[in-house]
Amino acid sequence: MSGFLNLSWQNLLRHRTRSILTMLGMAASVGVLFSVLSFNQGFNQGLETELERTGLHFMIVPSGCAHEVASLVLHGAVIPKFLDTKVMQHVRSTSGISLATPILVAQLPDPQRGKIDLIYGVDMAALSAIKPGWQIDGKTPTQENEVLLGYEVAQHEKLQPGDTLRTTEDGRTLIVGGIVNLTGSQDDAFVYLPIETAQALLDHPSAATAIGVKVDDPSKMVEIIESLSAAVPGIQIVTMGEVMNSISNLAASAKALSLSIVLIAILISAVGVMNSILMAVFERTQEIGMMRAVGASRFDIFRIILEETTIIALVGGLIGIFLSVLGSRLIETFVRSVVPYVPSGELISFDPKIAAGSVLFIFIIGIAAGVYPAWKAAKINPIEAIKG
Amino acid sequence: MIELKQIEKNYRRGAEEVHALRGVDLSIAAGELLAITGPSGAGKTTLLHILGCLDQPSKGEVLFDGVKASSLAENKLVKLRREKIGFVFQQFYLIPRLSVFDNIALPLLFSKKSADRNKILELAALVGLEHRLDHSPAQLSGGEMQRTAIARGLVNGPEILLADEPTGNLDTENSEKIYKILRSLSENGLTTVMITHNPELAARAERAIQIRDGLIHS
Ligand SMILES: Nc1ncnc2c1ncn2[C@@H]1O[C@H](COP(=O)(O)OP(=O)(O)OP(=O)(O)O)[C@@H](O)[C@H]1O
Ligand SMILES: [Mg+2]
Image 1 (cartoon, rainbow over the protein chains, first blue to last red):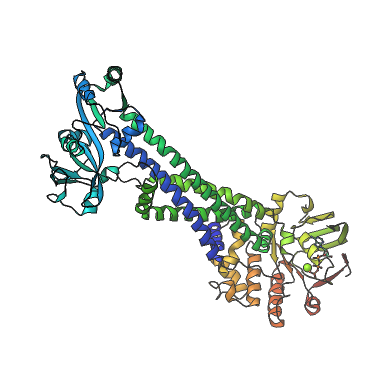
Image 2: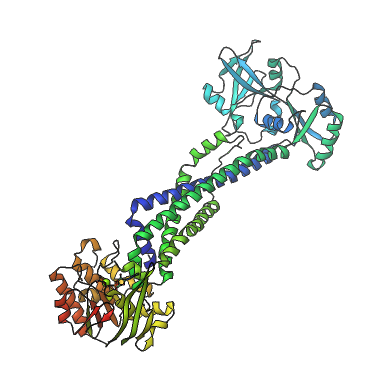
């Protein structure tokens, strides 16, 4: 270790507890900064891949709060409104459409279990187009009384493929055909069943909450959407791009909030660093006077003190990154519980660029926090200091 | 080698003006051992700081090797202190977490020289601390701390060593050791100035001056 660095380091060790606490303050704020940045990046990437993976180009929903409806249908929620049955015929007769598949999302109470199942009726043949990313244990339902369970439902009910989910009011026995692997999204909470079965259970033949549409040529999408909206009243069309946009807008405010909290935390810990180094400078006034007398320039003193802060910031920063990588699962679970919509997949992965950026940022903050104490130290008058 | 001409030093203490030095003429020859005595508040420390170019006089001239130090810029003064002047203080001012070796080598950090192990060993041997190099200051006696500080004051190879009551915190036996070290340094050609309250030590120095009320009464 170079002489200056060693001197600064030894000085920090003189008040071990104080230095460690100050470092931990830095570590905490860097850790949170790193986690939030990683999370934001993971969120955007997750959203993009989810968008890329969706085989559908747009959704037709009953007019109303269209974006919400579409995003909810995409990720499951119950809407009381159904699309008119005639809509489907219109869509099918429109040229340029390669796939139009009805989706029915609803709640279905089960008095025997005292529970409400969230059901998602879908044409099982079109499932791989709607949810291309899914991995399924068991098989995709082929029979009308076969269902597919979201991961959480299967976990919660302790069901395996081949087990019975429930018996319905009209005497059907719903058998678990397969279980969808964990997606980390709201998809995990649904029971997927053939749309005809869902319609029968709800006593709404040919009802749908949305129609997912895939076009032959995406460049013609705008014209198709225009002609459909003109031809069919009472509907709204939402493209997947718009859905993803509204989701990320929704998330943007959460991100902004979390980032500003992080920045405040960093500011507070920077003030902590400044305070602790300032204390150290005042305690060492005489020593600093001595160093000036034995040949230290003002700049030498400035440098020693500034190095102390940068050591605190750097070591604290590295500890913070290390801890937040260790704790990323925990943080992810927490974030999922507070942010409204979170795409599937692992969100916080270690990105060296973000880690380096966070450490660099805290390094700069550390230097900034060190400038004032270092300047104070450099200004100490050696004669006053060593008079004793 | 150092010449002070009509040095005055005034301090402001609130509305009142303190005349710490009131026209001091002093000439110090190379290699001499000079003892400065005088009552508390007489201006001894003020004089020593001016000799060491740590402080500037309010009036008068300081000639260091013929160079007018009292009109040098700050960076030149820093260089002068580094290269030509060694300081020793009553309170030692060792850095607690550094070893004796590193404490002795500290000034080299500021003169951007690397610590030559043999040279430090030599200095340590000169002050009788060759077996204590890895100790921390807390493990030393007062006398040993002061000897470490003397070695530190010598590490840049100064032309003059300025000691402000170096034995002030020590018992007779340790004071004697310190005195002998300073004495042998000056016998080897190092100009040495020592402030002391101990009349016996002052009497044994080559030359002794007494300061009273900011003036020399030899
Ligand atoms: N920074 C200062 N501001 C005001 N007065 C000062 C200052 N420094 C020294 N003095 C005054 O100048 C006078 C000389 O002080 P100095 O420290 O040189 O005395 P000294 O001879 O070294 O005394 P001692 O033996 O107690 O160390 C004293 O009256 C002191 O109070
Ligand atoms: Mg004094």
